[in-house]
Image (cartoon, one colour):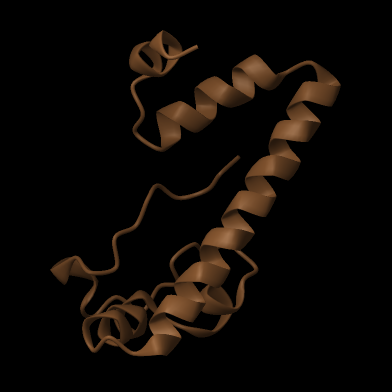
Length: 99
């Protein structure tokens, strides 16, 4: 699992960023648009921004569910869960408190 962390395209540091949201993602937003352009669309409240970011998020969740099912089937879900929570900035102890 070598995915990037959460990316808030409204952040000013992405104003000139030519990189995709996630270089390993296969969604239309990541294949064809830069972070800078997505930031511009979002700031201009263009409907395309919402559509592209929704496609990206749905692709992310589909991949997440596929990886989780694989982790469960192969008996490594606990390790996968820890890696996922570490990568996305979640506090493992607070996440476990809700279990």
